[in-house]
Length: 347
Image (tube, rainbow, N blue to C red; front, top):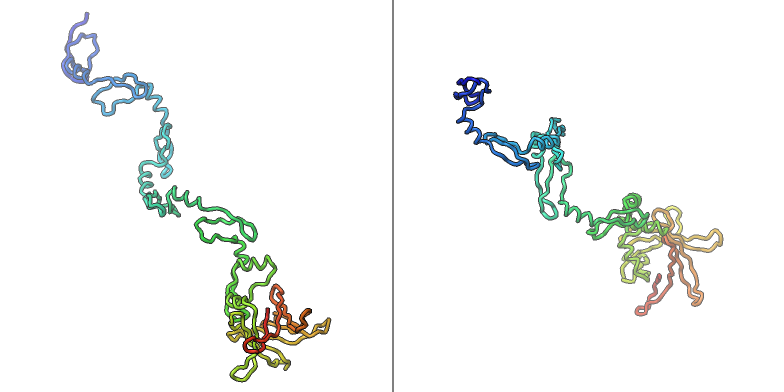
């Protein structure tokens, strides 16, 4: 049997009485009782097993050894997308972090809120974006639903149009470039006017020349029949003034001699005084019949006319042909019911 001896506990340092073959205890009896009172049992958060825990521990374990090993196996390291530093990541996370704490703070500072231009809701926007959104997701979806595709009325190409537009486009960009609006001078009054893309396409489809008169002059020429009256100016010159059915002056014509050849000709002027054409007597090369030819200031033939006799009436009239569509007009001499004065009427 061993001998009793006195020594000191390893951790508390108090005097203890033990046999010489015993291992030196950590605590004396008093300190051991106090230390044992600090220990308690808790359940593992993973499997529910009992874990022995000390109340003095700053971070008591949440899992038993088995669960902790399984839990630790889910952690792995990845590189921060900003600076390349190591980030500790868990496989159970739905959205693992892309940045370390330092880079995340810098990244988060770039985000700010602005109001949706449609409903006023807050939109989360980044200062690095070249084109920050103007609308929230709901308003963006609503706006996109308003767009639809339609066919170009000329070539059939697809056009992106919006239901809110009061006048959706009729023609694609290619047709708009090919038939870009033109500015021309009216051959009647010389004022400038625009020939739209639609008008050019319509004329091309039907084989017509582009309009030569401005909209105002075209409106004047719409009202038929025309009435041509022989009148005298304050200087005693004989002129032939043509009015439309509304009584608005269309043109004025007067006879003269050509400056170059001395031959007789008739000069036509618009109501504003601009020369619109010159008429001269001609003879057909094939038939030898006389006719009149009117050329514009550009030298191009505007119309031709010749005298004819009505098949049923036997009365003389003038038939003229002109315009891009080759329209024929009939002009005959008539007498005013009220004044008895003669005039020429064109239908």
